[in-house]
Image (cartoon, rainbow, N blue to C red):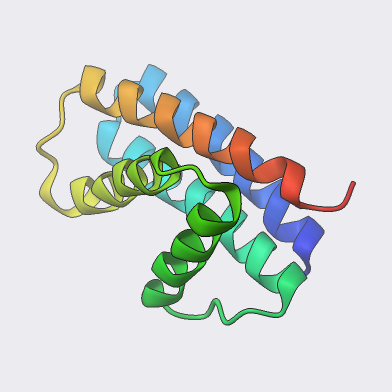
Length: 118
């Protein structure tokens, strides 16, 4: 997949997550929220020639970006996305928890988007 395709898919998944949550499916919203964060990281990693084919590579990318941007909250935002991934399996978050986490994913994407070419 190309950088642009990862980026577009990330935004598409976030929109789908919001729609799933509005329809009452917090599990599917959770997984799509996670996917939105993961695909934006893949876009950045692809653009920079970094590995991105394993779950652990997302954490490496986030650590690099935290250092580059000097933004410690970026790890916290990604942590919330990762909790969404976990919630897909455990289904323990309330709809409000998922909504708040999706807001954090949106913040995460807005921090990363400017790092990609237009």
